[in-house]
Image 1 (cartoon, rainbow, N blue to C red):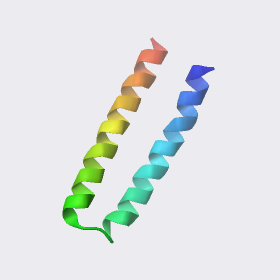
Image 2 (cartoon, rainbow, N blue to C red):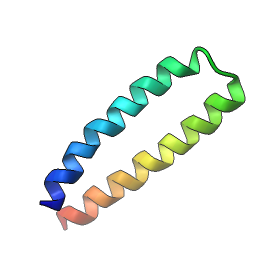
Image 3 (tube, one colour):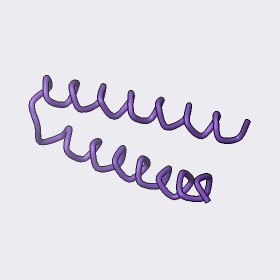
Image 4 (tube, helix red, strand yellow):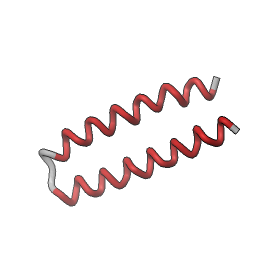
Length: 55
């Protein structure tokens, strides 16, 4: 179901956050901020999707 697929993707978002934390150590500050902001938006959008699926 769509809900199950969404829950699987939640693990992917967590993995991306972990990888970003490691990559921040080797990239420029501006790149880190840009990627962090993009991932934060993706994470928030995903949480909104999960909320709408549960309604």
